[in-house]
Image 1 (cartoon, helix red, strand yellow):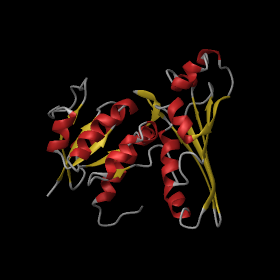
Image 2: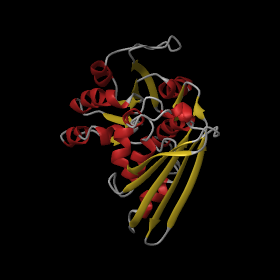
Image 3: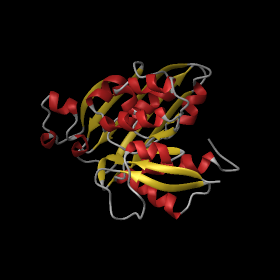
Image 4: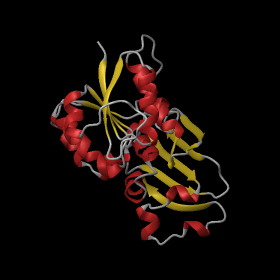
Length: 259
C-alpha cells in the first residue's frame, strides 16, 4: 500500500519533488498539494493545510520559514509525520518543537544543500569539540534578509568577496531565515545552534552557492565543501536541496539503503 504524500509549497523545491513523485517513487503517491499560487503544471488537487494533513500520511514542507508553523501545527494535531526542508524555522519558531512533543509525529530533516551529515551524526557518539559552517553566495542571494536590512548593507556595492555575518546558527537563522537552512541542519546533526559557528559571505564572482563545514571531534575531523548551482527559480536555494528530499523518500522504503 502506497504512502499518501502531500506537498506544502509548490515553488522551486516543491515543484521538483512533485515531478519526481508523479514520475514515480516506489511506495509513495502524491495525492494533493497546498499553495497560495498553485502552478498549472500539475494535475493534482490543491487544498489548505488542514485538508492536506487530514488526507495525507506524510507531508513534505517546501515553504518560506514564516509559513512553516501553520503547516506543522496542522500535521501535529493529526499525528502526521513531516519532511521539513526549512530547518531554520525550528530555530526561529521554537514552539514548533514544543508542539511536536505532544504529538505522535516525526520531523525528518533532509541534508538539503550539504554533504557529510552522516559523518557528523556518527561523530556525535564520540564527541564533537567544534562545528563551523561558511556559506558563500552571490550578493543577490541575500536580498531581503533581515540582517542585511537592519545593517543597511547595499548588496549592489559589493565588488569583492565580503563577509556579511559571523555568529552562531541561532543568530544566523534570525538574520538570514531564507539562506541558512544548511546551518540549522548542521546544528541539529551536531552540537546545537548556540555552539554551531556560522559565517556568511557574499561573492559577486561566484557562480555557485558554496557551503564548507569543519567539524572537529575527539577522534575525527570532518571537512566538506559543496559547490551547488543555485536554483534558477530561487537563487536563495540550491538545486541539491530538492534532490535531498527525493533521496529521503527513495531510502525510506528501499530494500537497500545507504544512510
